[in-house]
Image (cartoon, rainbow, N blue to C red; front, side):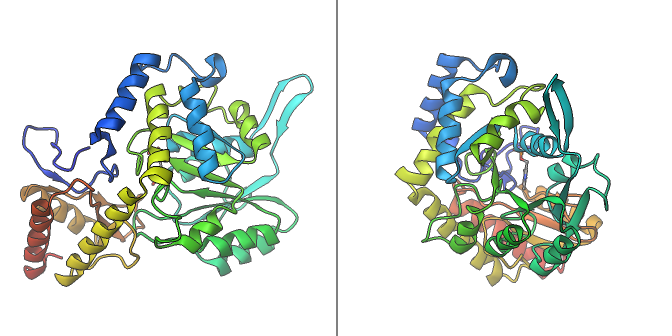
Length: 376
Ligand SMILES: Cc1ncc(COP(=O)(O)O)c(C=O)c1O
């Protein structure tokens, strides 16, 4: 959505909710790429990957993303949520395909960061907690080690996120991957939020992102920096190839629309190699925004990622504040349980590369007034 988006009515509001934070669909060259691919391939998918195969745009996207993430191969899914569901289904399931061809992963157990995204918990819904599903405290290396020690001898997959979008925290990825390697566990990092934003040496969290590249699997969503729809998992080629069949998510539901695949390949090359300045400029704008929020003493989350939240705590108060901002023409969404922890409600503020100084100033002025009135 655009930074001055509508709210289901004709009334214009300023949107601080959209995770399409780089606003790249507004660029003429990106639009050309999307329109050209629509002309070439059409918009509808026409069916599932397993049934009808994929277009050259999909192949280009998967190879481009795999190369960027330093992995042998990548496979795409309709959304990041479908990718997560497909991954857990593939790694947890037991299926007999035909005589002599079976997948038996009945003994695999999963260890999740407790604050993992809804889609990951949803994917594991059929796994009994304490038998096949375990958790460790958010981003805690000690807590993960305690769990892994108890699971010695089992086939284990450790699942965590790179950047947590509710509180902006970043996982200690070297340390978590070190532990996985020491205990012979596979690692799966959900990098929905940091894809194409973090990693290069001149940006924050470079070291953590070097650690992420060591993980067995990396999942990304195309909804955030890319600003389109879809998800990918990158990893070892034999495993990635097998996911086409055993994830279920390539057999029973449609994949990424071809124009979105073409757009993702284009935007990945743009942000990673051709114009990384786009992201550098955006992060500088975020840093400036955060310091202005701190100047008016807004109680924002500590970690300086592009995911900034105002910590509210009480859920009812959080919804009240959301409505109060809306009355001032600003949309900042309340994140309540299960998106946030119980009693840990936040208002999440996403700055958009397209926000004007006037829109930012208005947001700060309104926030300052709420702060002065002790509403925050
Ligand atoms: C950490 C994380 N994983 C997965 C997803 C799901 O991605 P998608 O919206 O592409 O389904 C999100 C989306 O917000 C996310 O934040």
